[in-house]
Image (tube, rainbow, N blue to C red):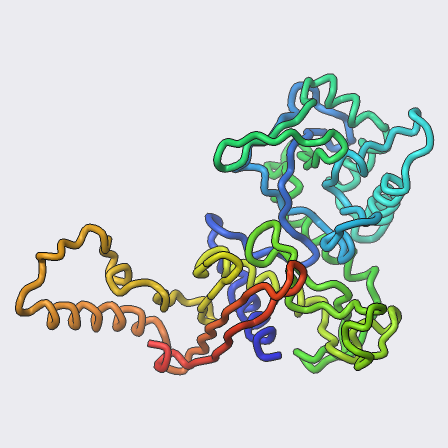
Length: 375
């Protein structure tokens, strides 16, 4: 289990130092999903006409609160507590009985807003969705049908019920209106989610009693990646040949009990590292990092790239009698540059990942090194 411990340590070291530009290190109990429409309301839950809009591809990734069940949702009813699809968030009592999905969404949002961890923005969204006017307001704004162009400009029509909505709550004196940007709202959901999950047990990473993870993260190598590194929800089919006898009540306890915080932070760190510095080839990803977060040379890049030289721009006739010496000196300087910031005893991890099946991922290579050995 050392890989998950190293990733957990990396998250703890880097959480407060991530740059505002580039890949995001997700907080616990949250994940990033593409939104299609942005709705603007005021602090009392009143719709702001003329302000709702369709989102472009590059601005659509949105950090949303989630439950363990909703973050891994593939089928069944498992609502996100705030930003959701129209199928969940269009609570229209006048149209007849609401669906199970809408009922579950409304209850989860109500429980949050009625708790000691309530947040004004969540309460404003709750006040608005109870009116049952979301779908009507969006149609009156001319926002349906919705089609989103991807990074290559190819447009895909989004089914009305699958349109995902994010929220802005505007209030005088508050410069941060986006729910995905408000750190106080993010922390509010984290505290509420923690308070409402009391399944505790022994964490094999920290060695302490803590809230255990029931579902472990996916979306590690790219946004649609469904393969998981940890999964033990096998109650039928005999995949494990009877080796473990856990039932749903004792999920994973015999095979691998990992706390919720450790699982979330380790997987979030791995996702972040892959997105910013991994080598990718098809399903395979290879990533190297310093646990402290310090920059490392890419071990899979060419030496010319390490020098900042475009290998295609190098002429084959540029060789001379002292080329070997010049090359060696430049390499020595480049490595010394990294070495000046990297302690000899620094913890470095080299990790290779590949898919065993569409739902399962394997660690194909793993090595822990000290900084001096790595360089």
